[in-house]
Structures are given as C-alpha cells and as structure tokens.
Image 1 (cartoon, each protein chain N blue to C red):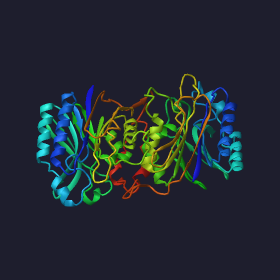
Image 2: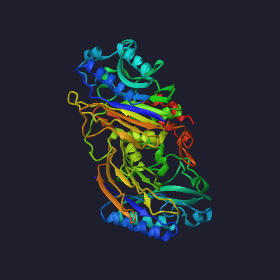
Image 3: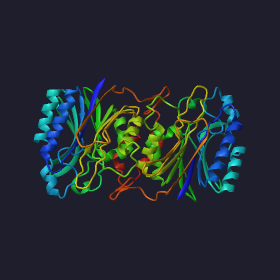
Length: 274
Length: 274
C-alpha cells in the first residue's frame, strides 16, 4: 500500500519566498503523515500570470538552483518521492516543467509539451515524451496540466508501463455547474480508468491577477474512482490530501478485458494526422 | 439549436417483440417532443447475455430486415435521424452494430471494434473506423459502448470532423461510489471536452440473467458538461431524455487554444505500438 499526498497551495506570484515556504511546509506535513509520494502544483516557484518576461526571469530557477537543492535534501531526509511543477531556465530558454526527485536526487525533468493560453509567449514547448521514472514506490509518469487534455499523451505513459501519473496543475476555473465534478477531475478520472493507473494531481488556489483557479486537486485509483478531492468550498488555505492506494500491477478491465491488449493500434494510424 | 433525445430502455432478452415495441414507442415519443436526433441503446433488438449462439441467431436481424424497414419509415415520417444499436447478421457473421438512419434511409452501419466480455464468443469484431455521416443536422459519428474506453477511437471522429457522437451503450453496473458520476458518463464527459463534440449516449436497464446495467444514459455538450443524465434511482421504466444544444462549429478550447491544432501528432508515434 502506498501513501500518496497532493498539496494544493495558495501560490503568490508577488512573493516567491512565500511559495517556497508553503511548498516546503506542505512537503514536510505530508511526510509526517507518512506519505511516500508527494505532488505539488504547476509553476510552484513562480505563479503563472506574468506581466512580462522580466518577471519570469526573476522567478524562474535553474537545475542547480537552491529550490532543487532544498527539495533533494528533504526527499533524502524524509525518504520520499517528490513531483513538482517549476519554472526552470536552461540554456537561455524558459520551460514549464515537472521534476521528479527521490532520495537519490533529481531523477528527471519534463518540459510541458502542450502550452495553454499565453504560455507560448513565455515558455519554450517541450518536444520529449512524458517523463517516466522507475522509483522504489513504482513507475511514476509526469506531465503538466493542459497536457491531460490530450489522451494520446496519457496513453504514452501506459505504453511505457507507468503505474502512477503525478500531475501538477494550474487549472483555471470556468463557468461550469457547481454540482458537477470539476472538469480537471473528470479528465483525470477518464485518464486513470482508460489506462489503469493511479493519477495524483495537485492544483493551486489564490486569485492571480484576475484569474481564479479551480482548486481541483484530486487522487483517483486505477479504476478512475475519486478517492479524495480538494474541498471545493473553502480554498483559502493550503490543503494536503492523503490517501493509501495499491499500486496497480496490470491493466485488467474485467475477466476477459485489458486496457492494453484490447487496443487495436493497426486501426489508429489516422491519429497521427494533424 | 438541435433537439436531441436519448432513449434508455428496459430491454428484455426473452422478448424481442417487446424490445421493438419499446424502441418504436420511445422514438415516436421523442419525435413528438420535437427531437431531430434520437439515440437508442446497444443491441436494442436482442439484449446481450446470450446462452448460446442459437439465441443470437434467433434475435439478430439483417440489413434488409423488418426492424430497419420500420425505422426507415418512422425516420422519414418524423423527419429525424436515428442512431441505434442492433445485432445484425451479414454474410454468415454476427456483428454488434450501430446504424444511422435519416429521412433518406439507411446511411451506414458500424461494427463494434473493441469487444467486451463474452462478446467475442458471439460477434465478429469490426475493422473499420468509427462511422461518420453528414446529415442535415450535422456530422454524426457513432461507435458502440466499450469503444469509448479507447480515446484513440474518439479522436478519430474529431479528426474526421464529427460534431456529434451518438453512442449506444449496454454498460454493466460496477461497485462504484453512488455519490460519484457513473463511469460511462465520466468517459463521455472527457470524450466531449477533449474533442469538442456533443456526446449523446443511450444506455439500457432491466437486470439480464444476473447482469445489472448502469443506466447511464447521458447527453453532454461540447465542453463536457452533463446537460441531462438518466434518473439513477428509478430505472424500472423507459426514460427519454431530451435537450436542446448548439451544434459545435469549431474546436476552440479558449482564446488561444484549439483541441485540434494544439495536438502534437509528430510526438504521438509510439501510440501505434501494441
């Protein structure tokens, strides 16, 4: 049984230090509750709604920056795997990334491939597949936020034998009926059920320069059942959501069905068209 | 504005005539309410849990059979488009199909590609893409039930410019929390939101030889919002669900995003692997 935590944080674009304090406190809180996998939101260090590139420059970190050093230290100390969204500058480009750290250090970093809204004014899109890392708690995949709207992208993680998808989010709120499951959670449920993997998604809160965030942090099991979801009413404070789940070992849909072997890829060729 | 109806029917595997009466009555009821698109469940003529092939032989119809003749007559009389699941025998094979009929007659038939449970003991799997038909109410795609678990399959309908996915279901009930949206509806919401098309799904009810059906008939708009869903409490009677929706004319996700052009198919090649 694996204890998983997603940390929904009220990020503050005006105060990077506050964001890192919030993040470190949430990670330590989750670890104290016994979590072995901890997921943080997209762009935890920076926030999202930049006025200009200078603001991003100020907020972005680097692969050898202090934030990663701190998190590598905490991951080792607490013996946990951490997946977090970060604005990273590398070789003169900014990337909207998700990094995977475990007790052995930085295991990999993923650059968001499908960019949302104004992001393409600031970030260079990635062109590598979803990151998948074999850890001592299972094969963990990651991508970022809008990537989840592309079911092809999640499928690639199943085809690469992922067991858990850890998903940093900054999901904008939209005008949807409040008695229905938030859209991000619906997409996550479908991704989990269709690919038979756990999905652990950490969203953010705090209105940012006019953008209201959905606060849809959620953990689903590999049948797509919501096992825990952020309190949709009170989103002023950080929320650390914790559940215990069996890491899935196969793709069985039923006694005679399997999400992987029931595929008919010979019939899917047109999916590569633009 | 298009008025759409999905008809959730308590099919009776012991009584084919009753099924056809139920179907015809539901179609006429929907038409009387002004529906221009009417969707019926999977295997409307036969039910699903066969004891042996002889039972299927008895229940299956043919492309020139009486059921299709009747429905072509009704579609013409009522000026509507009908999408329905049928067990069809053709050239010595049985197929689990979805047929599209409009006032001009039978427009096409689709053979279920991804077979569930024991179906492969009875039916030959199709090997053609989802059926898409240009009608006077829009470009309508169809597939059948378990096909929806394969997001590649839905994607193909978007890539072929479908605006509405009409989906016959026989969705088995499973042991999921009753306060969550039924799984079929979740998958349908995701399919709609990710592909920016309307999905109109007709499920069935009435326990059949030990199988309880989910009764998850639902219509979502092209943002994946549930616009109507079958009463989950009382499923003893037929339910005809009717809503008015604008047929979507583009794939816009937001001012700068588009479900089709934001795809990165050059990065999806591995999706064709088994």
